[in-house]
Image (cartoon, rainbow, N blue to C red; front, side):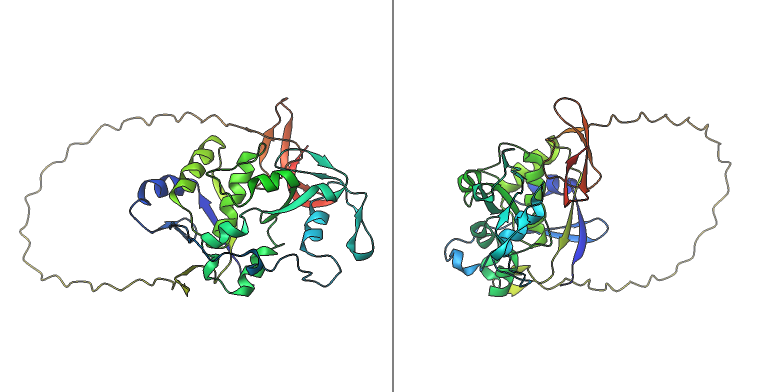
Length: 304
């Protein structure tokens, strides 16, 4: 499936908050054009069975749930018959709890299925909903977390629920997943997002936008094309000859020396998932950590 890499500037949200009370869409230009839409939530019609999930896409005996557990384990588990996992270790990003048995974990859809439905998935095809429910190509879409934390979240959005730990990473991932699938935001969401983008020092969100998911009233939104504007032809007129006058030479004003801005480093939780790769943070005890993968774990976490 073709993917388009976009970078979403934090400044976009400040503008969105102020204009979306009256406008239904906003186009932000960075390296690429990125369309973010706000809309009233679509109420009614949702059923979890409309999103076929936990499939075995590659027919290797492990369904989507098990694939996420394998990918996110800090200690890789052994895979037995029927993909039964033993000997692994996991850390829940929502509360920092660690597990050596996957029975205590749920696989959370970062954007809950019901929230996706209300934000645009109601207009998708069955295949598109299945793709969303089983997306393993972006590690932010599905995440292994403490079962009780996932169940307390339910189908709430960021207006009414945030995890006890790693709120900044959660907000970043929430925005990335919604933009990836061209899901709409409501004004309450955007208000919360703008506040956390400011306090978390989030400057951009890197996201692969999937084509074909941006829908309104069951129709794909066409890509707008610019309408050429005719250039008027000016009628030439005689230009009188001006009498030259001496121009005084201005004394140049010396340029001010810029003061370098202080660099702020975010406080992070060691071992938690993070983005973007290469980011640097410090733990509460002052130890420096980098957002990176390891030889045994392909997902970005805060590591020394």
